[in-house]
Amino acid sequence: MDTSIAVLEEKYITFKIYDYLLALPVNSVFKVTTCPPDFSQTLQNSKLAQMGQRTVMLINLYSYLDPNYNRNQQNDNNGRFLIISQGQNAEFYGILADTPPSMLSISDTSIQPVPQSFHSIGLPTWVSKIAIIEQKGTPTTILMLDINQNFSNKALDMAPNYR
Image 1 (cartoon, helix red, strand yellow):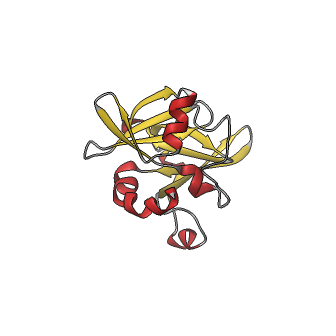
Image 2: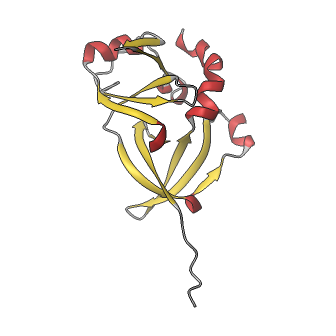
Image 3: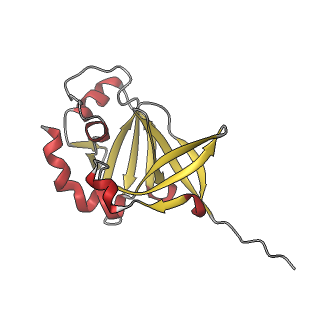
């Protein structure tokens, strides 16, 4: 008799911003592309960008993850890659990332909801869950983003950080 419990794994696109590892469910990612330097600078200084027939709203995660962030600072690595995610209402969100994103399978047993108290100490409200996984023998925390639950509902709350 087999008493093992099936562990479900889902695929995520993971990317790093500063020292944080973030993840989006692969089914919410529309496209990942390299970002030309001039376009990267345009995206860093605006909230919306036109990409072909689509309007993409830039989610500037740098300003949320670094309290000393200055959008005017020059950083050659800032925004080498653009992750475009699509929300349930067909909105497109662009996230600039320093390094190439990768795909990672994460088991559902590694994922836990973020306690509300974590938000009171500065964890952004758009982090819906966290995953703790072993990488090279070391526990690694991944901040899980949910485009449908957080970015689309919190977009107006983020606008002040683009001053």
